[in-house]
Length: 524
Image 1 (tube, helix red, strand yellow):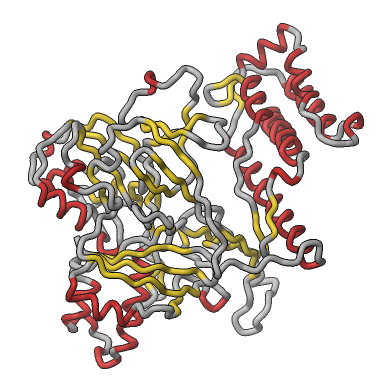
Image 2 (cartoon, one colour; image 1 turned 180 degrees about the horizontal axis):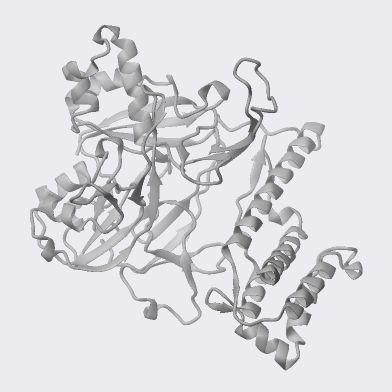
């Protein structure tokens, strides 16, 4: 397929609102949606051609570029700087890592193996990084940077907060100084008009709250490709379809409707069969690693949000028995995608991605980024500005820790027969361990370990039979004490803050988590 690629450099945070977080916050997607890019280009085109008027569908070129389905606007994912795959892709949900393995070194693909094939010492958990680039059995994992800003609602006419309109809300946006590669699938005849809309080093505003310091982006590296493969140069389609499996990986969220027009979240067997011109009975699902999400949007013309609909999340993997595939049918499948709103980048599909080497294990690393000209200048070491930035980074990092703690407490419940006296005893020891005089009033996890190791038989049985999830309370507490916090550093003006800069943070929040879970159980 032919395509145009270009890079979007975020000069300000971008707010591409998704349905995450609490009602008083807007949390951005980890990428720039294709619908947002398409909408911005429609606005540019109409501004350049004011004679079109209100009936834009009467214009032939408008219909072809934005509504026909022959031109498709894919999501802009993080740039990788890797020649074989310059645009990262969603991490497959069939990938797992060994729980507690830091730094991450190995990934296991359970779409090609069974849980029983793993070593007994491996406890699999999903890979947390949402994007990846793949070169045979070598994987680089990527995670977007975010910025959290607190805002106050203002009265429209008075221009300030009032008792009636003064709520505090939070934006968690894609941070500035990041690069995302966007792709437009098109024909060569569309190159000239799209190049006029995407001029080199031109400014474009994307997303919400543009008047409040969000959305400024620069366009660069515009390039037309006569042949372009979404999964990278090293994985041609001709080689991929020759496999003992028929595997589908979603490279974006997929919106499906059933025969009654209801939105559903299930394997897309019917649509897949229609696309490949085969009977649905031939698609025998062997494995599936699927997650769901909610999709919405905003219509700038109407000034109204779009309806919220459930969708299959990107990275979902479906494995079928081997099939004889028609090459042209598979090409059409990867070009057009499946489901609803495919013009906006939904429903992207890769056939037999990662199957070339028949690998079940991958070597994983994190990217090594070099500072670019768009990186913020580093403040002079030891200056008051640097100290202030460091203090701000620390406070924001602690806010993230508090949020993580609240999330953990809401997730876990103690089930089974354990007396309130034992829970109170655990809380008392954890509270004393928060400020151990022998360690200079620093937190001391050893006190909790000593409690668990010296319990009478009756109390030990209660801690053993009380469950959190599938584990005993005692074992879960010990796992928390060995490490449970996985929060990325916070950086402000080049000054970063993370767990390694304060050895007391991890044990402190672990003790707070133990106390909160025990207190929650006593109330229940």
